[in-house]
Length: 100
Image (tube, rainbow, N blue to C red):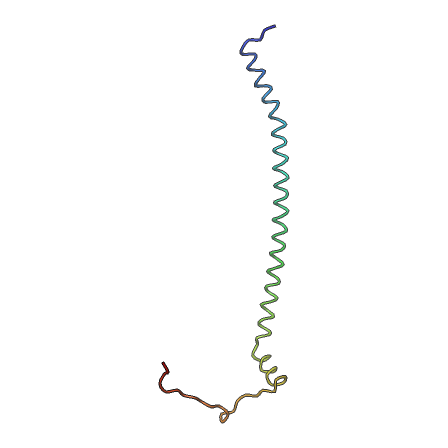
């Protein structure tokens, strides 16, 4: 039984299409896994970003508390025994001319 050219072409096309279906399904599965992995990574990065933003806010708050003038003045007087300079304690030095 001989097949004419048209029938051969139909069989080849059918075979190619039948072979492509599993290949396309495998490709779809791989892409789905990659998408799920990337989505999970994005979620983790977003959570990390939120944690870092909160930590940054806390650090900024701590800086403002630690650098307040009241706190610095209290530490200077209480812990370091410093006091505000009186007018007679201030010495001014003026330099005339410049060394070369």
